[in-house]
Image (cartoon, rainbow, N blue to C red; front, side):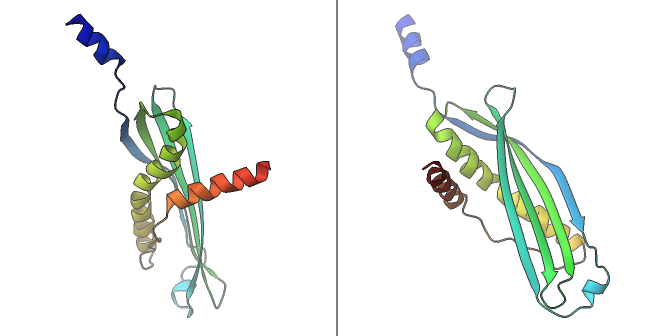
Length: 158
């Protein structure tokens, strides 16, 4: 019986990946040209910037992952700003028994992919509340972004 307990204690533990909490760190909506932009003709032009940060928290096996998105929408004809949305949307994740070589992909791909649909919904709702049609961001391939970032860092080191 005691031998079985020793074997269980030495057996590899399964990985744990769990979103503990999701929250807004910062949210800004600007409509600097209102109400004129609602009367102007022209197609919208969109510029989106995405950032991703992660850090280990003091609590064991917990990490904060933050998506930062800035979306600036202008009128293609008048070049006037329709609106600017800035958001920092974050989550606390429990990541336990995950091999070190897999931590960066989990934080940069899996955690970000889990947060993004909620971030996208907040952005859409804020644009509607600002008087515009829903601003629906295209899905993001976080795996491709991660691989591109790795290649870019490797090229810079050479």
